[in-house]
Length: 499
Image 1 (cartoon, one colour):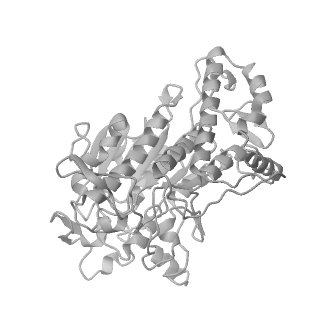
Image 2 (cartoon, helix red, strand yellow):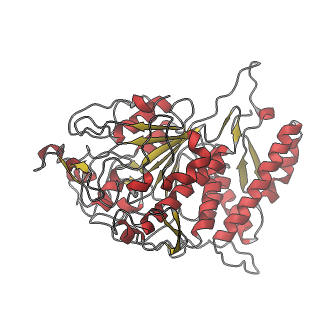
Image 3 (cartoon, rainbow, N blue to C red):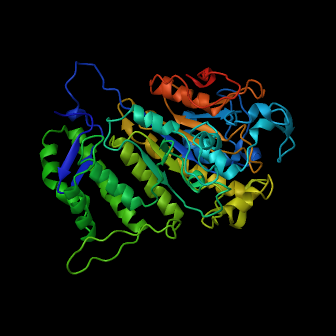
């Protein structure tokens, strides 16, 4: 029986297809099939240069700040949210020597920050809590394991959503990384600064940095029913295909011809366009990952995945990873993708980023330097701002590619919810007024608007309520509560961001 997730099958290959009207299940005239909803949290570490990130606005009347200009083509589908925090998960919130609600100077432009917004060591505890909204140190204390070395946390929001969608797609969720900057782990297990997703308190999901492995996972996953593992024979055939440097499409010719006989002229053109895109993506993937040459016996070889290679050609890698995410969502291979643009406290030198003089709003000479060092080189540090601007470009590129894919009356971006976010305000390590925005989510969330939430420490909103809103208002999961609040304030949806 035909379903929304139609596929082409061949030897060791099952390729999910985009929505084709000709293959839609039978339905009453005029009745439409609602496309699925997706969630793509995109994390960048270390905060942002607040002067160049935030250009205050009001509702639909707002302009993109300099760091956000790459989002101009999708500004109409962007929701900027100001004054959202993530510090009520601190177990010591109510017993701090300086009351948590006391305003203290922050290390940027002399403005004030609630004392409870600071937490150390920040580069491990802050990213570890961004998708859990609980105090990971407290979780480890409760379990009587070593706080500093044990890889124990809490289930993350993306995984709760993925678990709520269990069985609907071949791959329940994907965890991807773009760059893999080395650096200290800030007094905790390395998993907290290098990983975002936890399926349960003891299972960190890790992240895949190799575009080739991501592509192979997408192609092979279709060989299994949703929620199951691909047939080992299919995996072996895929390995042999890679060793022979063959296209995945070569084994799909027969099923492609059979499928074309079922399609309208417009759908045939759509299928041809899609398959051409898949082949181009294969070629891009091959160009970003080195592989050993096949031997005369044509033995399958594993493609290297060394972290020393993970930071080569960041610009090319970005394009390929974004294309893979579009492919995964368009073909309904998964509906949850967590995208980590770099590790927290990354010491990576961003030599691929041209430096920009944001103070004078003009190009500067040279390229950006060490990421973590630039974070602590002052508010008006152009290296730091240039790096953040490039990370925004990564999200903007993905959003535009999603917006170019039509799904019925809306686009793939409309039917997805991207969340671009960081775990720190700026170099001050504060967990309040965090850089973040939503893109897409048409019909549920406001679009093309700037929303300012209250900055009153006693009543300011926290990330736990954002995820609570996404889980229930967008995905309809019926979650009763999420995250911790030492003030004992129950979860509530953030009505100000809803359409």
